[in-house]
Image (tube, rainbow, N blue to C red; front, side, top):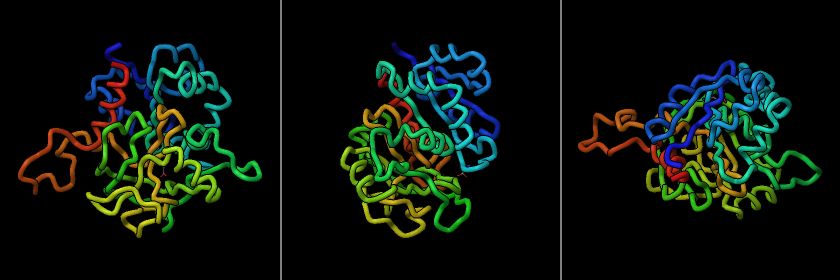
Length: 267
Ligand SMILES: NC(=O)CC[C@H](N)C(=O)O
């Protein structure tokens, strides 16, 4: 298969679906933006796609908790779709960006197979430490050995823009298990040379106070990935905030490689 088909799932309040579809197209994929209600009406639509992408935004107005309502609708009405993409034959990919990661976290697929003491949720995304929406560019380091989307990437410079993005693990055992399995695969970093660090960095390097500087988590197979920063907002070099000050422009923005990795997985 050369060009995978991407289902970019929309809901009321989604606002990054066009940019995300565009990023996948630039990487060589075919995309369709489909409203969640269309999928609930016609669940068989899922069979047309190899990649499920949940883009960023404010689905259902972030009511109750960001991502909670869309995740609940998916759990109750699209369980087969979720199961097909997350498990199935292991031949599909799932990507959640920002609000999309919030949905994947609420669905439990990013922390699947990790038990927390007392049967609690193993991890969640809480409000940023300073209690506000934060919008800034961040340095990211990858431990990309496991995650399909981060293959061969060491560093990315991407914008983040969220209020409820602080990754919090239930306890050290959960954190240790996820880390040991290589699932804490994207971290906020000190600077462009920064590598993966476990001790939380000061604001603004760690913009929300996340445990172990976690910015993205993948499932046990590396095919299901959620991240809080926005790779679709750094596809072209001219989206870099200092692009006019650089003497030479790189061929692409840092985010494009993630989408290319997804597409080439199907080659
Ligand atoms: N950019 C986004 O997807 C925002 C996510 C969510 N609405 C939040 O503020 O936390």
